Image 1 (cartoon, rainbow, N blue to C red):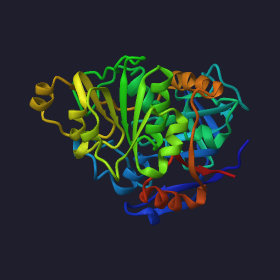
Image 2 (image 1 turned 30 degrees about the vertical axis):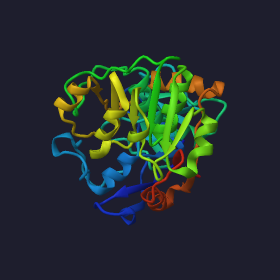
Image 3 (image 1 turned 90 degrees about the vertical axis):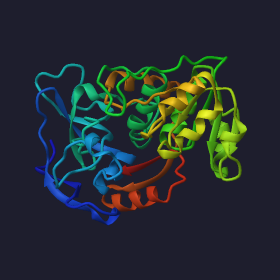
Amino acid sequence: MPTHTMRAIRLYEHGGPEVLRCDQVPVPEAGPGEVLVRVHAVGVNPPDWYLRDGLTNLPPETRPKFRLPVIPGTDVSGVIEAVAADVDGFSPGDEVFGLLRFPSFDGGAYAEYVTAPASDLARKPTGIDHVHAAGVPMAGLTAWQFLIELGHDHPSPFQEARHRPVPLGADTTVLINGAAGGVGHFGLQLAKWRGARVIAVASGGHESFLRKLGADRFIDYTKSRPEELVRGADLVLDTVGGSASSRFLRTLKRGGALFPVFFADFKDEESAKLGVTVSAAQVRSNGAQLAELGSLLDAGTVRVAIDSTFPLADAWAAHERASRGHIQGKIVLTVA
């Protein structure tokens, strides 16, 4: 069993990477429906630095509630240390990975131990290590829920209509903006798995990487404007999103769809005039979907790219790396 205390990264105030403080805190205890995980690796995701910044980039009505000090992080891979009496299907010693309690900010993953709802976990694919497994949950599930299956009926804070993925196949062309990043490189591979033709948009240094993942066409956005080069696409997955996302509307054919991962404002009359749909989802924890992704990882159909790793105590350095952009795959924290 674990000792009574553990190392964890906590936020006492909002600000830059320097506010991430390594503390000694009590080891949490698993409640009903939960397991205690000894963490081996932690995935670093945009919501981690949104939380660090105080969620200032989100509309006030969409900001989850949280209280300082808080342990950031949602993506873990590790080994089950203990299980609650009402948990079936998992036992101490099982290797697992998961997206914890998202879209709340109660994940607490930047730590040596974390409690996790059993329903948020799946068995770690045997063919990959904990570092690669920790890079999967949020980014992989975002790509899955946008492109393959939403998998829940929870309303989105960003739109009233339920998000519906576009059927993908050999006659489908998908443009992925930000294709080299976490969500982008999973989205590319899932679209190829379903047989679609994929146009990958990223900076030029990522071309070889994206070609190896299966991209049929590559556009270097530092040299060309994809909205001027592409017409007749069935779907755009814009992993960057934001205010510039509307420029991709003109790349779509009538009946096409634009899926911005980060919320953006669109004029309904513009999309209606073009005959296209704009839709988004809010990723949610889902152990069953993660298990499906795990089978693709085990088969080698999908792989995880790791941009860089940092020790848990250097979480601030991982956030500094993220702030420089041009990330290829995922940033991961390692826990000794």
